[in-house]
Structure formats: C-alpha cells, structure tokens
Image (cartoon, rainbow, N blue to C red):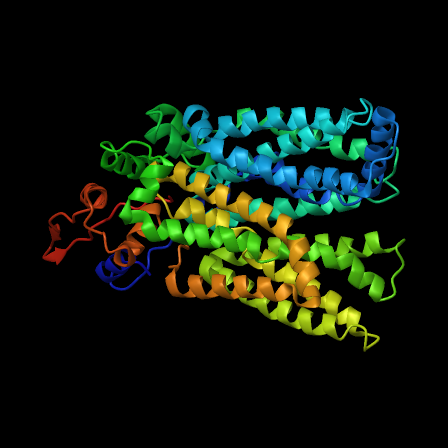
Length: 531
C-alpha cells in the first residue's frame, strides 16, 4: 500500500475506497492497440528466430547450386558454412542497427509513427527473401535477413515504449507481456509453417520467408486508426486535444481530467529539460542504478542461454530414439510450451509482480541447466536418461517465458520517466542485440570446448541475474512512473539533484485546510489517476 492510499484510508476511517469499474476494465481500443502493435513487431521477431531452422538444408543446397552457376565448381564446406553463418547472424547485426536508430525515429515520428515506418523494412525484407531464389542471388537472402533484423530492432524498442505509455498502471505489466506472448506465437508459427506438409519443402521455402509481409500488411491497415501515445502527444507534441481523445479511447471514459493533469504536472517539471540523449543518460547519476538494472537485465535476457538450447534439442531427441521424421513434430511442443508459459505469466504478473517472476525465472533456469548438465553426462549410460534431458529443456523454456522472456522490456519502460525513456530503450536494445550476437558467435566454440558442461556457463549468468534483481530491483507493480523513479533515489544517493527536486515540487499535492462540517473534519481528496 502506498503513502497516498494509507492517508486516504486513515481519513476515511480505515475504509478503502472502491475503484470505479470503468477504471479497471480493459477497453477494446487498448487491447486492439496491443494486439496490432505486437503483430507487426514482436511476432515477426519470434517468427524470424525460428523460420531459418526448417529450410536450412534447402537453402544451403541453393547456395551451392548458385555458386556452381557462377564459378563452375561446388562451394567448399567452409564457404557454405560461412555463408550460412552470415545469413543467420546478420539478423542480430540488423537488430543492433535498428535499436541504435530508434531514439531518433520516435523523436521525429512518435511511437505509433515509428511502428508504421517499421513495416517498410519488413516489406523490403519480404521482397528480398521471397525472390532471392528466383533471382539466383544468395546476397538477396542475406540482405533480407539484415532488413528484417533492422525492423525487429526498431520494433522491440518502440513497441514496449508505446504499450507502457498507453496502459493504465494496474494493467501495464499484463499489456506489456503481450510482447513476450507474440514472440512465442511467432516462434511457434515458424515451426508449424516449416513442417514438410506446409512450407518446409524445397519448392516452398521462399514462401516461408515471404510470409512476413502478411502481418506487416495487417498492422499497416489497422494501426493508423488507433490513437498515438497520449503522454507523447501531450509532453512532446503539446497537442492536448489529441491527447485527451487518446486517453478517452484507451481508458473508455469521458472525464480524463486527472490523467491530463498528472501528465501536465510532469511536463511542467521537465520544461527546463530536453529529451535526453544516450550520453545524458550515462552522465546523470540520478538514474545510474536504473540504467545498470536495465543493462544487467537485458544482458541476462540473452546470455541466460535460451537461444543456445535449440542446438541440443534435436540431438537429445535422436539419442532418445526418435527418428528424424517425427522430430519436427516433437519440437513443436517447445513452441507450444513457450506460448502457454508466456500467457500464464501475463495473467499473473499484476498479482505476483515483476520482481518475483524475474527472480523465479532466472533461478529456475539455473536449476534446470544444472540438472541438464548431469543428465547429459549420464545420457549414454542409462537408456531413459535422454527423456529427462528433454524434460529439462522444456523446464528451461517454461522458466524463461514465465518472467525473463518479456518483463525486461516492460521494466525498461517503467524505470525511466518521459525525457529519458527513448535513450533508455536505445541502450537496452543495444545490449540486447550485442548479447544476442555474442551468444550466436561464441556458443559453438563453448560447446566444442566444454561439451556437455557448456550449459554451466549459462547457469552462472542466470544466478548472477537472479541475485542482482533480488538485491537491487524494487517492485514496480501498480506504481506511477514518478513513484518508480523515487524508489531508486536512496540507492542512487542523488535524490537532491535538480531535476528530481523540481519534479517533487511540481508533483507534490499539498493538502488544503480541512473543511469542518458540524464540528467534524471533512475528507481531503487527493488527485490520483489511472496512469
């Protein structure tokens, strides 16, 4: 219970005021914005992660055939391996480029405008990926993977910012988990469409890549009719009329005076401030531990080893006696479990909180990786041990999606106030994509060196992440952005900084003199909004 609520209860004789039903329900506009925003962003990111697995053999054969047509001889194994590695890893390089540019884009185009522009990268990527085989050009496939990576880098930064700013605080975490859910649905879609009966065939794999144009087209058709972030409109565009309409649409009520006044107050506090750059973010000690928390959380998000787990899945299934013909269908269970765990996390996040889910997720992954290491070492000695290894893989996936899979993006939007949020997402995206690239680059060497002990490296990162979050991260559930910033003031030891002081002065609500009616003190009403 926060201080304001305690004051109200005391003044009301201990009775808690009942929330208005209209302030607690989800509106169609809010849900639609979350669904459509995710469809053209996080969904395509998840799809792009898994779509390269099924047609790998056919793409390598295409590369070799194209090489023969050009140079009159087959490509060597080293050349094919290099081309395939570039095709896969260039996705992360594109993501890094997109993340670095998102701060400028959202400043010029806004949150919604950036998401719409992102569809241009997706359409270009679909064109290059879908027509690369017809043009006999593996360079087109590599360029297409780079462009879809750029789009993913932009989307994974702009989308959580948009979702966090349009969501009332009592559902901000749940709406933010839409991002994680759609990543998992995208992964699962890539696995399903990659089945041999569908698009995972030698004559159809180009359609498998070109599929990305469909979600982008749907987002482009619907998103312009949904409102922009009201906080962006009011604080950065000074457009109160549109901001009021946006608040009304997202909250489903006509009177949004409280919400407008809250954002106005924050805007007045930041009048003397400009939209911070990344350099400003690193220099300001008042947000030092928020920045460290985002960097650690986003690094652990990638370095916890989930992406590397796919290297072992097929091998473990083969060891368990499953034939290559049915392994693609069994691996569908991983995508299905991912989706189910992400949905469950979204349903409970506002009840349990961000902090417990993150700590549990990283901790459970560490335990599962430790058991997986034991079972892998016993796999050749006990007939049924591979089944336990596969169970550990499923446990790792479920643990990841229960918290670490989506909450880091929610946290990045919650830990910073408006002027620092764009720069924070640039830093978070950079750390995310650099860590992604590092895992893809180094894991084969780690695996070759440590063999069955390779997952102990990821166990260390999971434990470090869980320990850091336990010691440092405050709970952000159902708090305003200002309250979250203030919760870091002690650890930053810079609460007396000018911006923070100014914010406290402007946003402080001083109780007026209590009215007396028949000798009884009246009730002082404090301003409180859904945001």
